[in-house]
Length: 218
Ligand code: DX5
Ligand code: ZN
Figure 1: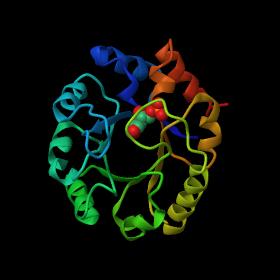
Figure 2 (figure 1 turned 90 degrees about the vertical axis):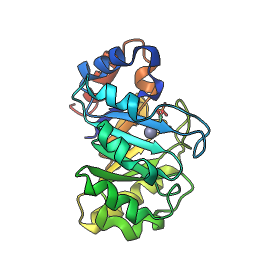
Figure 3 (figure 1 turned 30 degrees about the vertical axis):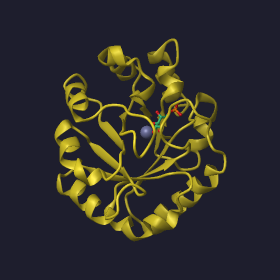
């Protein structure tokens, strides 16, 4: 059984509060917020001011995924904006350990994310310090891409690594998650499934969120 984190990236940006209400009514466990800077990834989305406003209109925990270069420059801004989980990419920060420590110092959960081509060995040395590992199952930057099948093995190895560490670390995956592969992916031991286009691209967003949730109650 996995939690569902709808990714706002595929929502109607002109009606964000209504879009959030729809996934809230569908039982979403987290709201996944993709921050992009046009440098680490080709796309640009939104930053702390928008997140801060959205925080006022919902009580869903905010899972903030930073796809920005040198995220250490903005940790406090995203904490102040209301992030409950703050995830940085290992490829984007030179002093990963220090960046994680800073996130933790604010009393929120620290996550680290790996691009599809980044080996798991890059995070071995920080397992003691993190709360979440986000495995990218597409190349970050855009919604609506296809799940990269070779990531299945990486997910399994990450699960094993977490189990062997005996640490309380959540495993999240992001990219290409649809209704028809969500259960199979969850069965690999994934704790949080991010789904963007599969939820916000649906005609009835609330119903689609419920359909994801229902996969795990049967
Ligand atoms: C991609 C983002 C994802 C994106 C996923 O860089 O990190 O969160 O919204 O979109 P889907 O679910 O459509 O693949
Ligand atoms: Zn994301």
